[in-house]
Figure 1 (cartoon, rainbow, N blue to C red):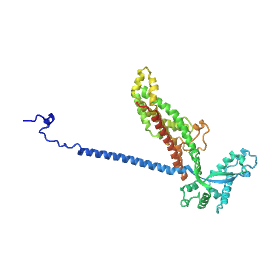
Figure 2 (figure 1 turned 45 degrees about the horizontal axis):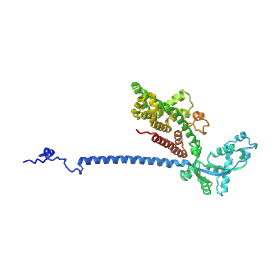
Figure 3 (figure 1 turned 60 degrees about the vertical axis):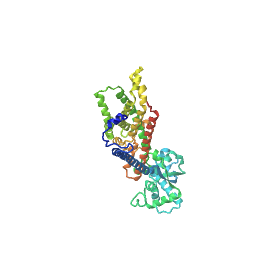
Figure 4 (figure 1 turned 90 degrees about the vertical axis):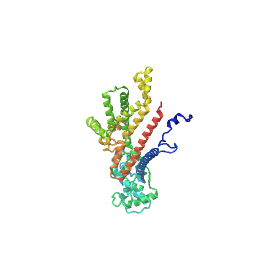
Length: 457
């Protein structure tokens, strides 16, 4: 007699052999163990990749900071210079035109006498002649003294305290870049001069301090690497970015709005979209060749001018801005457009009053990233001559800033890196630090703007 208390499932499985996969739910099957092991390996691979990336980033930052911080410090020597009236203003009339006739060669003896007097004052015994003693100073010292006299002719005849740059070898010695062993065959410095340097350091006459002129100054010739600065090239980059911002932003946003919101979907717009995507991947040096052919050879715009550099970088940045702006417009839900059209708004009102404000954070982010990319470009600037000119003075007007020959930060770094003196190489690393600060700042602003104006729906 069968047991009528059995459930239907028990009846259905009665007489069947137990499944080979049957077991406790608390125990992992071999397949589950294999899958979990693969997941652990994948996580390990990911963590290893992140670790390698962070290690490379740490090495990069450490190398840049370690080699570039020296550029923000410079060695100076303090001297009392007698501005001899017989040599600087023989007539005694303080006529500026007559004083300007005295070149830097006329100021060199004053500096030599000041160094010799300082050595004697400190009681340093040496067999070096005054000319050799003055060799510890930068060749920029005479120009610095002349510029002071031209600005202050009433100081002629008096003894004035000056702080002069030392030579690049002395500066390198103070920073540990130059040693007594490394100057064995160096004609620019001698062990006897380093003895004078050590004595002046002990007396507090010669010291290494923060170098503001590196940030605000201009480039210098190969004979004066210790006087080179980034200031004028920073202005060149600023004027180029103004050109890029004034042209790329309105053109790029207008083109994006038309292609995304108004243009008919046909083969012509498909070709335009494909070409825009392809232009974003074109090497930047191609845009440099285009700028050289069109803006300089055909339109005869001034070579090495920030205006030409800005036009070239505008062409290079436009595809990036168009692509990012179209992505921001696509991210706005279609319901926003439909709701605006449903209450009687025109197509243009729906786009400019509703869609564009919601897409503004993405547009700003893409624009700033495009500007940051343009700020760091070097190849296009090489072809339009922005590395073949040493800008010694800052532009005085907006027109000068756009049309006068100048350099840019990445081009200036490239120019320093290829020069022979190690002091220029140190300044190239320092310029990289300044450039990275600008790039990080621009990307930080992009993130802040996105989070500040982003709306969620």
